[in-house]
Image 1: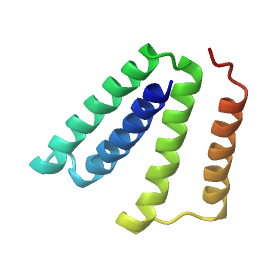
Image 2: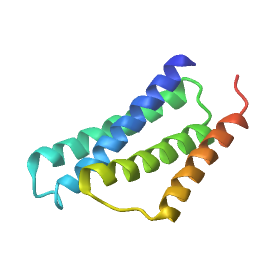
Image 3: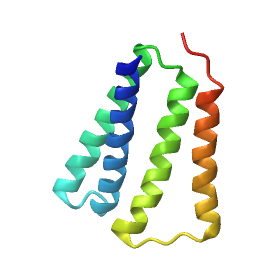
Image 4: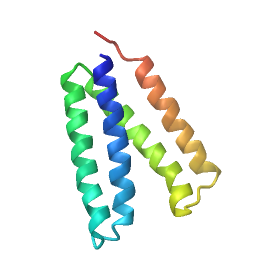
Length: 110
C-alpha cells in the first residue's frame, strides 16, 4: 500500500506542476511551459491510475488528489503569481484539507 500512496503523491505533484505550467504557458503560446503541462498531466493521470491498480480506493484517492492539488495550487498561486485570497479563500482551503483528512479517516483499507 506504501507504493500506492507514493504514486498518489507523484500524481498530486505532477498535477500541480501541470496546472502551474498551464498558467505560465499563456494560452499554450510558450513552448517550455506547454511541454510541462502535457508531461505533468500525463504523469498525474498515469500515476493516479497506477495507484488505483495498487489498491487505493477510487473515492479516497480522487478526493485526496483533487483536494490536495486544489489547495496546493491556490497556495502556490499566492507566492508565484501574486494572486490574492481573502479570509473566505483561506477558510475554503482549510475545509478542503479537513474534508480530505475526514475522507481518509472514513475509508476502509484492505
